[in-house]
Length: 376
Image (tube, rainbow, N blue to C red; front, side, top):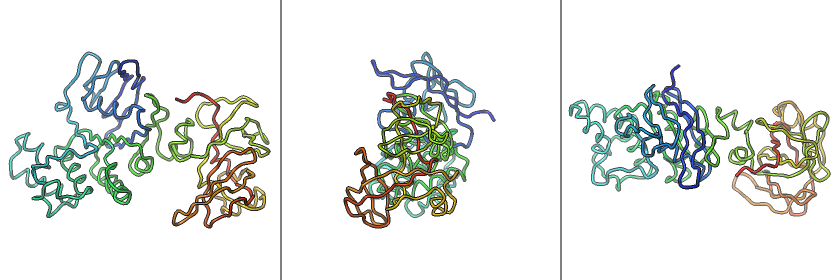
């Protein structure tokens, strides 16, 4: 299948700061891509270059087989058949909902009867019926977002760009809207390039993730692959592996492992990293993958406890002492300390008193091992 969008070796600098470094990927028609990364990683600059709002210093942007941006040439945004939904929605405050959605169609001089038919279809699709005469300030945040999406879809763009579209909504509404948007875009077959800092939003919407750091791409893969095999330490932390333990790299029963205090934890080495015996290693894991027990368990018992859902059945045990418990509604977040005084967080169904000693059990497939390198 011919890509709808190709980004070939794009670079962009602002003074001495390299905002983008050799960015390369393609987007298939109907595909939803989410670009995920922390603030300052270059994702917004990339979005603006694709939109035509900035020009690359090197490389090219190809849309439907036509080059629309190089260091020496730039096709303006209005000639790319690309629409964008901005972070603040950018609705015309003096226009009602109907006129906001119809804006692009009116500029294209579409017949009034066809405009009305198109707007009615979009308003039904986005559950905006009865709001056509309201002004944007009279709408809720979720309604304003739906209007912005309807306006962007009205002209049937080749590519829809989403710039942190849910960041101004509260948590409950964000969860509802990301599900609605994913369903809508797949139903319509819309090709979407979506920028966000929220992993849950990216997981909910994307066919593939592009994970960025310091102006470069760390990983491009489907969401499940990125989650299970984060290519870099930065990607793992971004995707929820908030626990980082530092130890020495060893092999335990022919498996890569980290020696942390007197405990040895086996894990996996994602990506192309090479670890040397006794070198410093960082083990990252997610709080939800740890299980607390007051007595040590065997691997067989652990496999039975998890009903065989722990992959290859290999687990490790980490001696720890509870230092603090925080209630979070449906669960407790427990802060514990290892024998060598490193901190680790896990979840539990009840409060555990400070000072309690026990064991944290961790499946090998959920323990990510990375060398100590500069990932800035």
